[in-house]
Image (cartoon, rainbow, N blue to C red):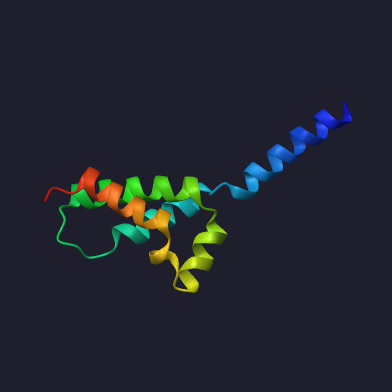
Length: 93
């Protein structure tokens, strides 16, 4: 019984540590949407919603912050995959 309780507590704690708050997601999305592009409003906001969803599922806020500050975010293979995926899905070329 103690093991089960410990496991449940551990799972709850670790999922909360890695979860983004709604405010953090909104901030990430807003930062994306503020970039000037030649995309339409619909394209840009579709792209930003897609990218925000994928990034917040893969990385913690601390990981994204750290990669941003040390200049490695744009080199990350998952970041690049998400950019390509969301561009293909939402941008009409």
